[in-house]
Every structure is written in C-alpha cells, then in structure tokens.
Length: 119
Length: 115
Image 1 (spheres, rainbow over the protein chains, first blue to last red):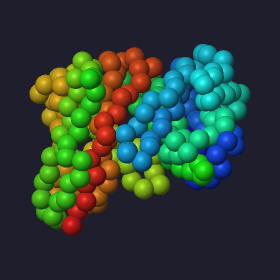
Image 2: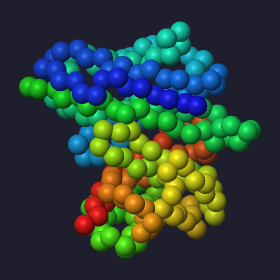
Image 3: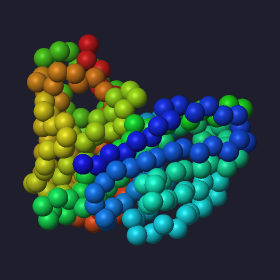
C-alpha cells in the first residue's frame, strides 16, 4: 500500500524566512514518481515538480528547492526567502506503476501543509 | 488558452437530489480524473478514465457516477446515495495514464454544499 505523510499541518512564517515542508512516503514499488502541488486560495492545484525514483538529484527552481532522499523515503520542499504570495496549501503526492500489469498507477496525496507567510 | 474548466464554481443541493458537475478540457489529454477534497485532508480519487467510453472506480466511488462519451468531457454525478457529499470537487487530466510520470493538470474546482 502507498502512503504519503506530511507531518506539518500548518506552518506560519514571516516574509523572507526560509521554510521547509516535509514529505515522507511509503511504497514497495521500485519505480515511482513524486510530485509537489500548490493550492492557492483560489482552489486550483498547480503542479510544481515531478521526480522519479531513479533520480536523486536535488533540484532548484528560483526560490524553490527539493531534496529527495531514498534512504529516508523523503522528498522535502524548501522555499527560500518566503513571500506572502507563497501562502497556500502544499501537497506532496506519490504515483506508482499499477498492480497486476496494468499501466495505471494511483496518485496518492498527503494531507497537505497550510503555509501562511505574514508580511 | 488550453486548460480545464469546471462548472459551476459553487453548487447547492437539497438532500435527495442528484447533481452533475461539469469538467471539460482542451488539452487533448487522454486521461481524466475526479477527486474529492475535504478540510484537512488530501485529495481522494473518485473515478478516473483513461480513454473514451471507459472509466474505473477510484477509492471512494460509492454514491457517484461518471460518463466519458467525449475525450474532452468527464461529468460527475453526485447521487442521493452519497451520504456526505458536501466537499470540494476537483477534476484533473493528463496524457495517457499509462505513463505514470505524467503530471496531472487540475481545474479550478466546484464547491458542493448540501442544504
């Protein structure tokens, strides 16, 4: 069974602080993909990043960076110099190859972390 | 612009009524999905469809029904059998679901409230 845990329900920071959102996953599959999505107050989920299980390189995109560590089954997300516009709910998700030879793999979401950045 | 549209944005339903939520995409995606989001919880999969005229149950399909008569459209009906339908419903699409690395793109959502 797959599971994604985002231990931080809510995080509150002041603008310009760095903040890390934790994500721990569980799967028995050796091939899988990890995702981060942002959900602003408007409600629509916005895709941020995809990482496959064979690529442990960390990634940086502007103020965003991701640390993937298979040894600890973690895929943490850091926002550097946070801004008020970063306030949103952030979801980590896991997708694996489908069981029984089917090619569909279920996307499993964590519970989400509510990030509030105060001016 | 390419994207996913959902309508209506807000929907109110009386107990015992069936309601249908619309989802349309012009991204030429093969696969479409319906998720339900409750406060403090992640998204849970209701139904998904990999190709036209085919769809599969997700984790919480009871009380819901779907159809996929056109590639662009994947409407969700919330039936009176759904005991607690008040939630935020999100539709998503992706290129062929068989490639598990394909990211899903989401619509703006429909907030359903049962009166």
